Amino acid sequence: METVVSLDGATAAHGGKAAALGALRRTGLPVPAGFVVPAGVPDHDLPAAVAAGLDDLAGPGAERAAVAVRSSATDEDGPRASAAGQYETVLGVVGPRAVAAAVVACRASATSVRATAYRGATAGTRTGTAAGEGEISAVEVAVLVQRLVDARAAGVLFTDGGHTVVEGSWGLGESVVRGAVDPDRWTVDGGGLRDRRPGSKRTRVDRSPGGTAVRDVPASHRDRLCLDDATVLRVAALGDRAAALLGGPQDVEWAVDDDGAVWLLQARPVTAPLPAGCGRAFGPVPGRIKGQMPAHSDREAVVRGVGASGGRATGPARVVRGPEVFGTVRAGDVLVCRETDPAWTPLFGVVSAVVTETGGLLSHAAIVARELRLPAVLGVPGATDVLRDGGTLAVDGDVGTVTAHPAR
Image 1 (tube, rainbow, N blue to C red):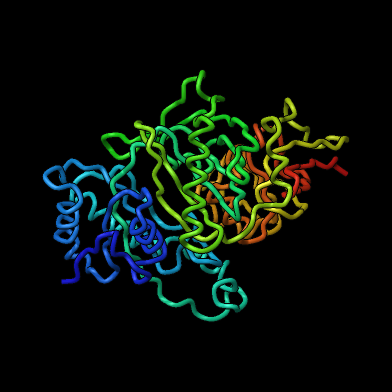
Image 2: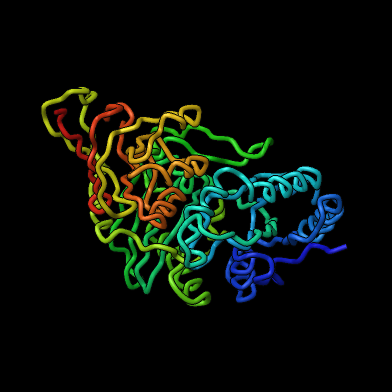
């Protein structure tokens, strides 16, 4: 029977995510301990394999240890296509039986609608052929199991040659990667803090007895920076070290625990650069026009957010409040929604641009939009109320503006 592999011994055969984290652990960087369930372990052997892995990881406390279970597929975290958020992640899993079930869920996500749609949309990037041409090789999914970091704050950073953008929020990093909050944002240049901008963090994700739970952030903390300057510089410095070790600009997920220790949870190549105008996002929190724009307004109106994916597009607004109305979206529409959970990314192959109420530059949706060269403006407060369905919108992802044109 093929058995689990310690994260310290992970290689490219175990997928990009596990291989990168294994390399960082071997150099002494702070990566949570874990093990990899190789793709070749059959489902019927998973309970025994997982139990052995948990015993090695947590010893006598294996039955009570909370872990993070994440895919490490052969087509994830590559230099040209990240598959950001397209596979399953299960956090706060406790006990061998639950961990084995989470491994099965991660494997099964390779054939989900969102992963399949993403694979098709990025086929040309991966293979050099046009999207939809030719067959995409079978995907193998190893699964990574690590100790869960109970994060005081967490997020993502992009680092490139001494220039680093850091985004973060309270609690686990799911709030940031899923675009559920307007995160705090900092820039670090040459080891010094250049900019800081507090976000609006109304909710947070934390570990709970059933896995994770979303709860409200107290009003006093919503607009308060989740990291002090010294910690931001520590996070950025670790990102620079990861980039130097792995060779090239990196997209790094990080967490700070209750003791103030910084942990690296993921590192992968940056697949598409940030928009050239994203520095404009470091002004005041994006603003809104009060009240709803009339369906047949005779004036042009502009709302501002964060330019998360460059380019310009014009099309009819399609306000979408949930997956149950995905069928109303037509080719060329401008998708307007509260947030873009990864389950929404199949729409990215249909629409001409994306506008959201929450989310930052480094969310999964923003990364995928940049890979697909889809203009996106995120963090437009009240967008689903302010922008009327069917009205003509001009989206500028370089400067972060959405212009509602008057009806003709």
